[in-house]
Image (tube, rainbow, N blue to C red; front, side, top):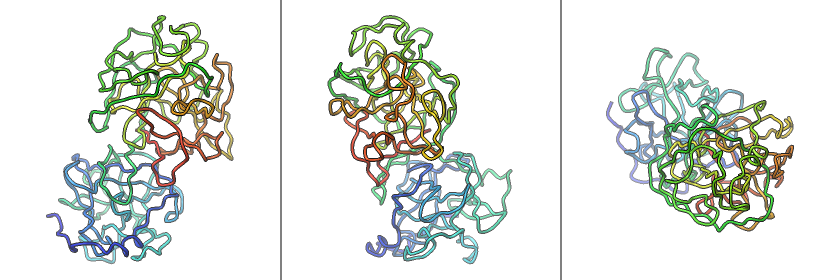
Length: 445
């Protein structure tokens, strides 16, 4: 099937803005990701391939990265969705939803349409846009809720509908890597699927992050203060290095990564902050792995809203591996980029009315921590989980972030009552007022 021709030369911008409104309050399991077919191609939309409001646009298939419009959000809660175990699939370019309409002519039944099902954007919820979803990145079938036994299928270069067949590879889709910025209605950057791995592994793993060169810089380090909680564990094995393109100063969060250890040091090596030299005994006491904890994700990478990955240098903090800046680097899959998401444990007592998670470095066992008392630009660091520098702390709400199991969520410390968020800064994580446009969302993959 050839790619369908554009049907309009331009959009009616006012009508489109009314019809295709982004739900900024929605919960996104994935944000601005590619949807890949079994043969490795990507779904995309051409915003001029439908009507004057960007409705009725076909969902097309092309080589990944070869077109605009390859970014998609997966929404699990919001103003256009109700029920459990369902999702909306929304174009980040147009903000229109996947829609299956069996009343339309065969071969033209799967299109993008205004979320809620009304052409002018006034709709609320329609089951023609709800698809079965169990939280997985796939491979999975896309099954519309308005026709049992039917699945989306790749037919040539477009998406169509067919009777579900588990053996048909053309009915298999995966939410995958970062989509390129499209300049559309949503500027939120990518998220990918969550996957489990071996905690604290020193072996490098692969990543679907875009391979672009970025420079990492950090604010000058401060040796004072006792930021929020984070825990770390001592690792074994000889030091190896990663080869990312980065430079740094002061806090050492960036420091040329060709010399940054990819395992947790067990020798008294130089460190950037207080003490000057790592004290392995003090580290072992301060950064203890909680072996009893419940981990929603283990040894995953986390992509910041700007598309870079969170990275730590275990020698960039103090003698106990506290106050380590969290760098933003091009994703490489190194052990320095691996994190656990803990929903229950000795530093996270469950609260059913306010579910939350710790984000813990799988390399050092330190927790991502916010401390508004610290100097501007240095309010977000890794710190011993529980909030006490020596590891004796129990629970610190400045290390807990609202979390209900999704793979895309804001780092909004409970201590700040959703007013302050952890956000990308100058080469490292920083803090600021919480946005509401999706640019505060971090993504697990």
